[in-house]
Amino acid sequence: MTGVGTAFGTFGELLQGVLPEEDGDFLVTLPVARWTMATFRQGSASGEIEVRPAHKTKALQLARMIADLAPRRPGSPPGGVLTVNSVIPEGKGLASSSADLVATARAVGRALDVAMPPVRIERLLSRIEPTDGVLYPAIVAFHHRSVRLRAVLGSLPAMAVVGVDEGGSVDTVDFNRIPKPFTTADRHAYAGLLDGLTTAVRRQDLAEVGRIATRSALMNQTLRHKRLLDPMRAICREVGGLGVAVGHSGTTLGVLIDATDPAYTRRVTAAAQACAELAGGVTVYRTLSFGNASCGAGLSVPTALGGGAPAEIGEGVP
Image (cartoon, rainbow, N blue to C red):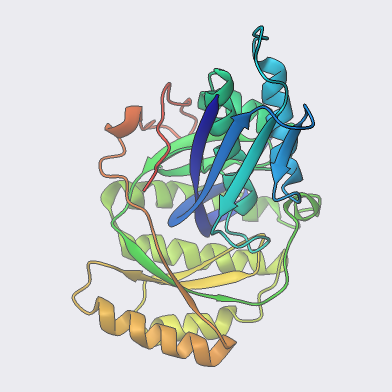
């Protein structure tokens, strides 16, 4: 009668752009330790499906779609109440909406006994909005506009992300309607960056990961300019960070710092102080590691970028 689901957020993306192929829009996720939890309880006073808080209308839409798939059981109470609790800021490029939807799919599916494998979740979400790849407990390359897994890249050692927010908010749907100004040369450059990032994740090469994240942030300036990018790059150099990651479709920027570095505490403290002086506020995030992503939680890591979706995947809960 009641189902619970969770999903993590991301700190923007390690890489986002367009490849030289049809359906070329893609991103590479950067999972962080911020979660959404959804609870769905069958039955409501109105006999309809309701959502709390009321502004989570996309989650409500998804809950109704899943309810339409559920077998009708005699005596089951009509309607239901979906409650979405999240600590992921909205409209900042941190995958808050994607996490809401994935957590909702898992909660409603469990309550109504509707199987929710990743492929079904992708198919449902594609009818609502462009979506991040947060249903996979790993760093993944994901076609966010068509809502389709491209490849599981794996996992990385934990990093801190010392983040700032330029203010305001960005609507995912509106952003993805903007024509991409990228040339054929840009598209081939993104393909090279994706190949390089795939290799860097496999080799656990955080320095190369940081370099590629910074390059992606710079290339995104023609699409959504961030006035703090150059100052954040300067802070990264000063504190010995790995690079700068951004919410390509959001308002956040962050300095990546290796959590296994013996100077980790000093670097994070210095970065936080400099970022606070720059932007008036700072938040430190922790990236998620998933152990051996090639064999944990049913994951299979494709060796080719066009590899198919794994058959079974867990949620990446804390």
